[in-house]
Structures are given as structure tokens and as C-alpha cells.
Length: 63
Image (cartoon, rainbow, N blue to C red; front, side, top):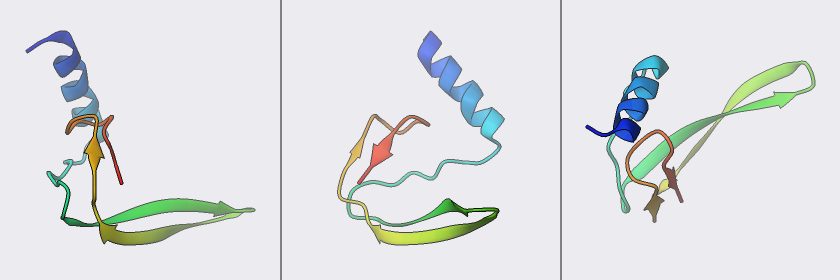
């Protein structure tokens, strides 16, 4: 295990949640925290993943 993989594993462990394995073609649901003045709520978005970049770690992004 190289240094970057070790740091990423530590970050995932500190997060306390398991990152699910998904790829293009999978349906995903994401919760986004929206702050409106003094109130906050979680807005859910659901759709089909069409691309994933940056690997499968905590720094990955998807469309």
C-alpha cells in the first residue's frame, strides 16, 4: 500500500460511513444539505450515473 492509499483509507475510516461501489448506469440517490437563512434541510436528488472520475475513493466525482 502506497502513501496515498494509506491516507485515503484513514480518511474513509474517519468518515465513519462506507462508500458504496457504483458505476455508470447505476441509479444513485444523493442528499445535499441546503441552508436557507437560519434553517437547513436535506434535498434528495436521484438519477442515473453517466460517468465517474477520480477512481473509487473519497475524492472521486460523478455525473
